[in-house]
Amino acid sequence: MKKKVIIYDRIEEPVLSTLKEEFDVQIFKEQDAHKDPDFLPFLQETEGIIGLDFPGKSDVLDQAPNLKIISNVSVGYNNLDTKELTKRNIMGTNTPDVLTDTVADMAMGLMLSTARRMPELDQYVKQGRWKEAVTTELFGADVHHKTLGIIGMGRIGKAIAQRAHLGFNMDILYHSRTPKPDAEEQFNALHMNLENLLRSSDYVCLITPLTDETKGMIGKKEFQIMKPSAIFINVSRGSTVVEADLIEALKNEEIAAAGLDVYIQEPVDPDNELLKMDNVVTLPHIGSATLETEIKMAELAAENLRAGLNGEKPGNLVNPEVWKKE
Ligand code: NAP
Ligand code: GLV
Image 1 (cartoon, rainbow, N blue to C red):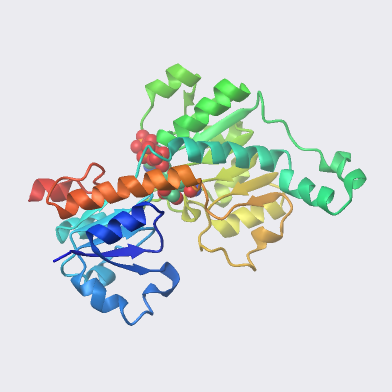
Image 2 (cartoon, rainbow, N blue to C red):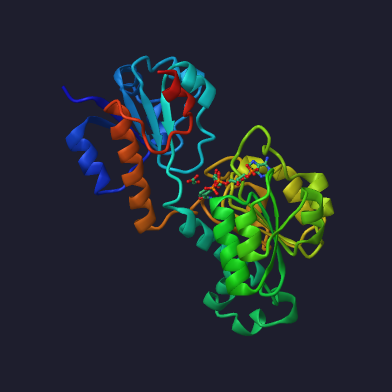
């Protein structure tokens, strides 16, 4: 008998078809899953879950007594309570590396489009207001040769540093809990505490995971330390920033602009004040969303799922303790 697997929200073809052949699959869209009368009965018998942002916390896990693995199609895994998973002998996996360059490209794009006011100017051109667009008030800020502060110098942080330093001649400052000698050697990056980074950067790019430690790490105090000309880019998770403080900082001109891919609530509330500000560029959490990369992520997540369900150790376990335990 085929093992029961939930596909949560979405998974790209051709991986979807392969999974349908191998397993007894049910697809539940994130927004409807928990209201769907078929969801709970299927979850009770499910051995594997693959998809985006499945809420892997104790209340839901209580309903999944046969579950062996939750395979995230994302590198971030703040949706999973890893301690709780380990306690229940459930594996959690993610998809690192395959998306690194794609997310770094997007972070650079967001930085450039915010600095050079591209979405705003695009609207002027499309509305036939070309002459009005080319005025001093609508001039942008240079990116090249400026100072970029990267908070979270991991895989993606380093790929951003590479583009910014080697491509745009930017000086790189970074903050992470441990120094990264490879980034220092390759991109001349300087390791420093958060306060010094915020004080000295023209651009601040946040790309840490969301953890208890990073939740709300950028708020009122941090925005007040930044330069009034600073441009803030968030590619990590919405909750690493106190969104109300970001709105205040923009209104009070404590910083110049923001480029955002992530929000505390996703999809973002259409009434969110950030959406009404011309100096805020907003994207719908699409850091890794190119077809090529989404397929690679789906393939890697499917490999992790298969390994877990076949009793093998998946390549990208986020709770390796579970394996040692067995
Ligand atoms: P990674 O390689 O694990 O890098 C994360 C870095 O953050 C690490 O080098 C870590 O360095 C640093 N860090 C962790 N806690 C910190 C703290 N309290 N203060 C300062 N730095 C801290 O992960 P990655 O592959 O680069 O991905 C990073 C995150 O980006 C993901 O977890 C996800 O949330 C987000 N992401 C978003 C998108 C999108 O679509 N917008 C796409 C992909 C990823 P230390 O351990 O030395 O502190
Ligand atoms: C996307 O946000 C990811 O974490 O992969």
